[in-house]
Image 1 (cartoon, helix red, strand yellow):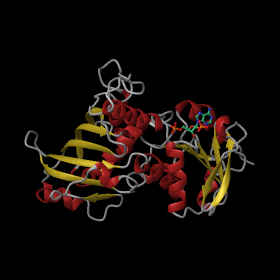
Image 2 (cartoon, protein in one colour):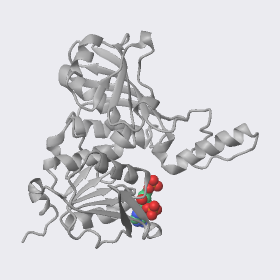
Image 3 (cartoon, helix red, strand yellow):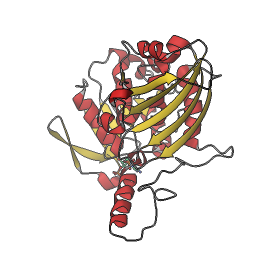
Image 4 (cartoon, helix red, strand yellow):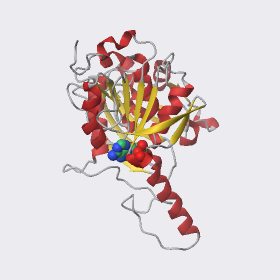
Length: 346
Ligand code: A2P
């Protein structure tokens, strides 16, 4: 009998009703994963919900049935075929290899394994074939801003050959988990009542403000979040020469990230040809009639599967370049849905 990581993974393609575990089931992304499995009628055999000892014994509802949350341990993965991890990088590093060794395919939402050569980084609409080659039994889910940006850029890359990206993101507070939402609400209430407050989650006031910092700074002046767009974009598109410069900004929006992108291509482009490149592509919809106030905004994508792209126009500075605006629900397509879609293609 094979016991190396990925041994049982290899037979998964034949498995019709896999046994799925969600690690971090009680978190914002975990709850959304549960919702995606239910809404997409995922052909589940069994479902195991795992979280910290604090949540053990709590009940969560799936398809009308109550399921007990169990404490995550290294022995949690016996018989599990697919383990969806969303409990932070530390938990993924500690327990991901245990799950893979027990024969589960790990689909990890953290950044722990994304740049590991032996771990494919997958957006099912873009590089589904990469999911087949998983020597460590682990598949990584990309960063949310990267997924949303690439959903808009991949069809254009296919048509015109992508060379470089300059982008600014407008990232919702729910990207920082429940604490981000609470901080925005508390600050708005305090301001309305003329009371003082001290920022805890964010480095500056987030209510009625924008903050040009997402994640921590690196020595070259970019934040880790900004470098994810560069490094993960190169890996997903298999474009090692891709040039990316990005500024990630936190905005007082509850949910859905927006990204303003200038993209330069190998071949000539124009707005009509770009819109035509999206025809027949799944997961991305063109919403682009600005004179009639039709363009995507975060409230349009919240709770939705598809990313929306608009404001498509020829860039006036660079040759063969376009400007565009893409919006997507970062908890859903940027995290939970993408992970569930990866499970679907296994
Ligand atoms: P718990 O609810 O028991 O703390 P979020 O990113 O929304 O804060 O969610 C984090 C998720 O990761 C939650 O489900 C949380 O469970 C889970 N988690 C955090 N620490 C641990 C741990 N040590 N072991 C297992 N799950 C953990």
